[in-house]
Image 1 (cartoon, rainbow, N blue to C red):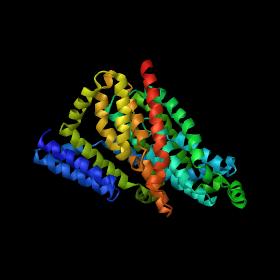
Image 2: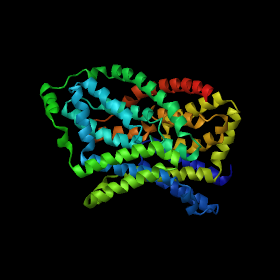
Image 3: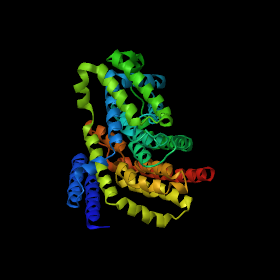
Image 4: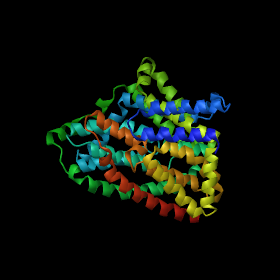
Length: 426
């Protein structure tokens, strides 16, 4: 590694150590890191525009578009309508409501990325739980955990999946066939564990008069704009169909998402500025800074050097390679955001893909499950905690980790066994 590469690596590590302390704004820190590596590369006669060209703009566009779609749909009352529809069959029984919400999270995580899922579910969950006078924190923690592992069978299920798919030749059909049964197994394993862990809170019945109010409430009263409501339903259906068949005909998820988002903005007309103000631009610029830092690692050849070192360790043993791709990125994702881990390791997974087509798939599994072992590992976790703090009822790091950490290690173990069995088939 030359001097320039050494400085770039030092800035990368320093940036993520600073972010992991949670004492600095992660967006500002990531952008500062981007600027600093730009100066380092400039000193080595590499123009800043070269660094900018290596940023994963397709993923940035996808996340931005999905946030716009979620904002419009939420503003129409679509998700509030769904929340009441989900709550009614449970008769506001706390445990049944908890299972229904987690099941809903599991399903929508196949279509929406984890950030969008939590942006939808967290406000709905808090609103409904406060109405029923029950603690929303077990719901938020569990929803964050579920959306992280439920996202593994879908390329659009999480930003790390998109990052890995951009860098590797991944078969979407193989991804679904391999990881969909595993995600169902993980849900069936985790649900009774979560129910048992939160039993004391979930056993508290809601007040009868509040339950009666919920049951009498007409879900259609939640619809604020019929035009936006029906447009949002059409938009979600288009996304589902396009994401399902788009890969086979060469449609990029970012292209589909930006078209759908633009359509919703066009019909919103006078509300466009208000919608755009509600988009989480902090996350967007965090991703830009992050991808810039990772691009600098690629430009200086650091990722290639890491790949050579890993190659010496793995050799041509596909089982060792699968275990490595699950556990090392998975554990790193627990202490560092799983997006940069995906961006750094994805080119390495692509390098060793000839050993087994399951290596990129193992990486997707590892970073998503590893991402919820600790609260700072995934954007979904951070959002769950942020929404709780906004309600002045914080979810502490230890409170989140007490259930998520052992559950995450259990899932990594189950997934390792599953993918090793799959390697015998594929």
